[in-house]
View: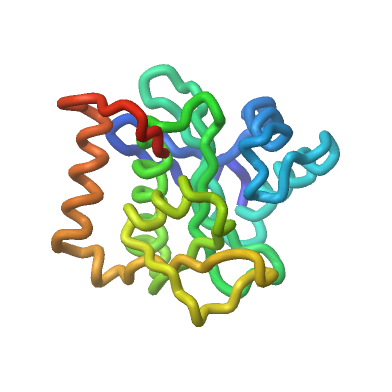
Length: 201
C-alpha cells in the first residue's frame, strides 16, 4: 500500500493522513526527546529513522498503521495515532503519541477515537489493546477515557507493560461510554471553560 492509498480520516479539528517523508522532522525531535521515554526512547538518529521507516512500511505489510495527525485549518502536525502490530506483539494495538508542545488539547483523544472507529467499522476488528508502560500515567488516563480497562490476564510484550483492553465494537455503538467520549471531544473543540493544572492528551 503506497502512502497515496492510505485512507484519510477527518474529525472536527483534525485530518489523519498517512505518514510522509516531510513529516519526519517532528517525529525525529519527539523520539529524541524525554517525551519518548515510555516508548523505547530517547532514540539516536539511526534508531529514529528506522522506526519512522517502520511506520510507513507497516501500512504496506499489515494494510493499516499509524496516521499522522494534522490540524484541519493549518495542516500543522500534532502527533500520530492508529494501529500497530509488529512482530512479537501478542495482539493488534491502538497507539498514539503527541509532540511534546502539543499535549493537553485533546488531540490524542480525538484522533484515537476516530482511528478506533475506522478499525471497528471499516476493517471489522472485534477489539484491540494498548500496551502501556505502567509509569505512563497520561497514556493510562487516556486509555481509560477511551473506555479501555486493564486486562491482568492478557499476554504482554515483554512483561514490563500493562495491557489495556478496548471496549468491543458493540459496546461503542451506543450508550453512556460513547456519549461521554464524544462530549469530552466536543468540549475540547468548543470549550465552555479551560481548566488549569490537568494537562492531558
